[in-house]
Image (cartoon, rainbow, N blue to C red):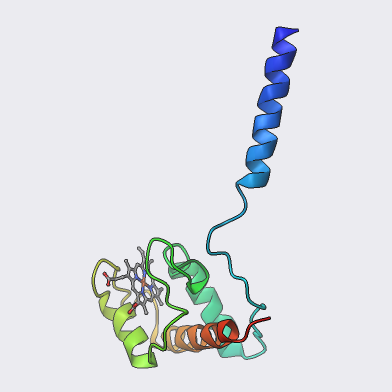
Length: 118
Ligand code: HEC
């Protein structure tokens, strides 16, 4: 009987963890991006590969948010190439110039989508 109780309690705990654990702080609350533009779609892939882990959805995570301020393209490029502060630099052998162009297009589209509430 006692074992059964422990089993039930463990199952309940695991279930509640799996339900509660998925609500992420800073999850995007805006409409999905229109990725009809191929540059934006490719930029999204670059972002998910290299930036998402620290700037989840462009919002703050390990790093400050980058979807809430009007950073001009050249600033984004500079930050990516030189990694100001504690952010690592991403050189041309990791993110090519074309990929960086697409990444900037994606970040601008992301910011625009965020400015438009649902
Ligand atoms: C390892 C974590 C990490 C990764 C990966 C990362 N960043 Fe960052 N990023 C940071 C941190 C930390 C800062 C703040 C730097 C500082 O000022 O010390 C930052 C700052 C920035 C800023 C400047 C924000 C501001 O307020 O001026 C931009 C733009 C940016 N990151 C873009 C990117 C892009 C684009 C990528 C993907 C190519 C990326 N980051 C990948 C950690 C990261």
